[in-house]
Length: 413
Image (tube, helix red, strand yellow):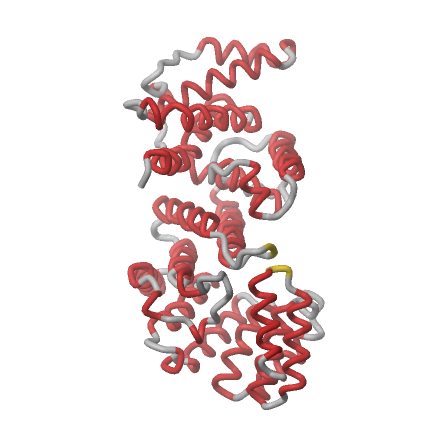
């Protein structure tokens, strides 16, 4: 690993800790976040050439605090004089963090910061963008690239999110105990969305973005470290690991998609599979059942099959039926239809598809047409399958998926 890469990984890990320390001490989430980004940039420029300081976290806190002082000086003195005085009076050094800061457990900051970035005052898109920026340490440009929007647009979205946090006067503390479970569900959903966007990008030339999946896994590991007894946190982490284990096998050298049934399973990451299976096995034995755990159990059944033909589809179908009972949504129903086709045949699966055609949330989604094409092909209706695959290709904005679906249609001519 190169020196620059080591520094990048270290800064990404330290970013939420440093931001948490500043916000906890000074407030002003938006100003603190800007100051931390400047400190990270300074470190990325200096450390590879000069070497990291003895106390990297303390160095970043010191530099970010000084940047914060500069920001506050440039703002309205009348409105922020008290804040400026607080920053000027703070005893900073270049190699150690402030003693008052070290008195608070560092491990609390990342989780608190995640809760803050997933504040209910923010839209789902803003929660995701702010989490990637403030907790993930990604730049605005990197986030904009991931979601294929101009950098200025993403910058405005993040700025609005920070302003919403300020307007909501959200304290830098964990939510009250009676709100924590509901807010944790939002945090996990944001991490789940981050992983999914990386695993199958919603649009663009690439099937997957490893930087986003890696970051989602890193953050979920951190939440699991802080909440080791939470079954859904363990379930989400297991689901990510088991799914990400397929990454290398999902694409050919030219970037084209390889479906699950055709993947070379010797390329699957056995270490991620073993870790994911161990996590979900322990979670199912000790924690209340939730949807992420059930999804992880389904992924484990797939991963433990030596070949596609060895897959225990009856067990997968039973798990999808359970998942539909505890977390019903059309995508779960569509996934269940795949298992139905394997267990009861394509005609039974097409009945499920027909029911989903009435659901506004999915009726125009390319995955519904792709599934319909697959089931029609299984049933021998090649003309119908060809048209369904073509329609699915027109509806997706992900180029590798589009080419795969067009190829499925072409093979049926």
